[in-house]
Length: 222
Image (cartoon, rainbow, N blue to C red; front, side):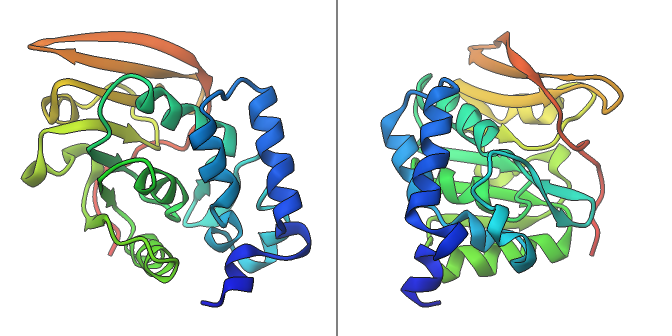
């Protein structure tokens, strides 16, 4: 993948990315390290070529299989919340999707362990992230409700689809002092984006804001 393809031209150019970052800053994202990472991350490579001209709009876009690439503001908000509440040494992501959120996480943490249940998305995300030189990511095709027990506990867990309630197996995989950011609720109503912090055997929950995510689904699509 050549440098021009990664850096983008026209509607995927540096100027377009800068406008996105300015909008995120205006919407309340304050972490300048994160904003710079978002500005430099080639979001257009994570969407279908026919949608690349919309890649730097602050909106969710379809990626196939009934899934979406999250709105940049939501990616930024979830990542910023984790960055500013504790360690990002070892991070578990539930729902790799196209790999855009994974890419951002990989630049703010030592190692990302990412789980995806749909084989086509799992394979494509791995291909894209490898092509742009991100090698601190471990991939698993599995049911996200189960997390990734082999490498637990995690400093941070981020869930990019909404279960009706917080999965107990994910709570159990949080380290003491670890945090989870997760949307909770059904698709019929607005969901709550929640921050859950583990303190020993206790879990403190707080609501960040209302959101709307695709549902977290069990099973594996091979």
